[in-house]
Length: 161
Image 1: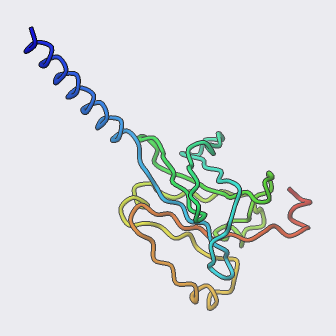
Image 2 (image 1 turned 180 degrees about the vertical axis):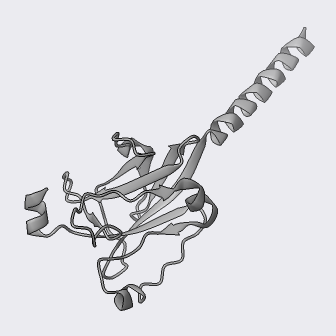
């Protein structure tokens, strides 16, 4: 009788461990760093807005923010593309992503391949400054890291939005 109970507990433990591994494989974890486009310094923010695969739905709840301003993003296994923006001042005002700063519409989203982020890391382009100044900010991403640069909206841009 004791042997059957012990076997049952061992079986249950093995099943729980196997389910944990399956759950871990069904998600992808990405580290997000948001930096100032002019200085390269970390930007304290109040939130990240994440979208995947050109969907309109925003998934802010997928990001766990760390003390250092980075975020840990957990995306579903089937997701292939992502777009991220940051909010400031505990409001709905968005930072302007420097990868879209050259566009006339500042609310344009740029999409990045999750597979590339996971394998080699990605630094988004910096069009907030001149190319020679952008080269001064040396950024080397780690595998699984997405680094993007931002600036605050101008008053004119805020009125347009």
